[in-house]
Length: 489
Image (tube, rainbow, N blue to C red; front, side, top):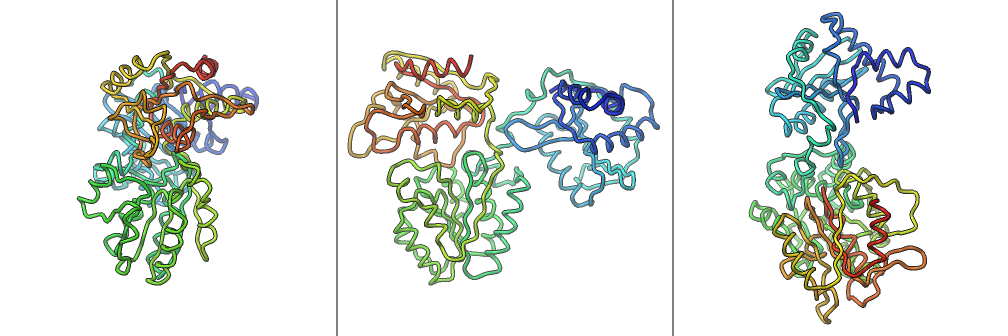
């Protein structure tokens, strides 16, 4: 995306024919509706009346979106001394304006501690500013033009370089302190589902609710945020279908009631008002049936959070827990569709890596995906240790409890397994692709060595844990190497 002069944008909209104007804003990477340009015209007119200098309209980013999350700003101007953000509204309520500007301040304050957040409302010709106490105040255009005049502009090649996904993509497990201290925001879709769920579980004796979402949709954050808001008035229990991680234990220390699924059988549910089953796709069918029966007996509400893509064994896949959830009488279903954690570059790469025949995915190489090729295991083991010490989270396949499997021959004993990282996320993830990964006749990635758990699904689980960078360590596999070369050329 390129910065633009606002007067230029407004005049181009008026003077150019539609095809020319479309090409013009496309050159700048701007996606703005015609009615929004009209709102901008009103703003520019007010600014021009106060100070008719073209420099105050210069170097704005219009409709900038933070990479990896669904956060957009109408107008942004970056300075060394402060950032200026202006939101455009044809009409709006003050409560809505305040909420948006508070969110904007949160996201922008990671770049500069001084942020001036404005909203211009065409109806009423009013300019609002978020003050130092995060309250709204009506201001005049003199203040805005003065701030624009005194801003020491920051020259940027790309504003993406200012934003670090780790600052915003909060996980209850990997950013537990931020989660506990409420240093995060939910998307509008998450907020809507949260409000519906809380209304249900606090006003009814027994409710069954499912929250379904793919990798990166923020279902774990949403589920734990719901519990945070009801656990002071209800007796809650979180059941995690897997091993508890470090984040779980930190929450338990803070008074959260969390157990692994293996402990559910012996747990007395008679005093519980709300049970949350996290990663429900991994529950046994008999455990689900027993929980539903106990919930009906003791008037317990249940929230089932799941992603059917994240099954790691044939047993989990064949259990088809989603169908059993949908069969629960009266269950209310919610589906998260907005990707908030997914790095778009890595998401596209995953699609074309796991299916070598996909031609409908546009992959843009931004340098966040890389690979190394080795031909012997000893070199790989040394390399894994090297990058582990250099800030990479090297995730390995979960081995069988019964038989020795090939991938154990190169795995680092300290590396986390596919099962231990369920629900977690890391900035830099590395995975190993050995010689037994290949493509079948339909172009789908498969694994040709026997493993207890599904190796392709485990690889998918591991890769989708990354927030920022991905590294593939390829062992003696020219087929996958050539696929990577063709993707990343």
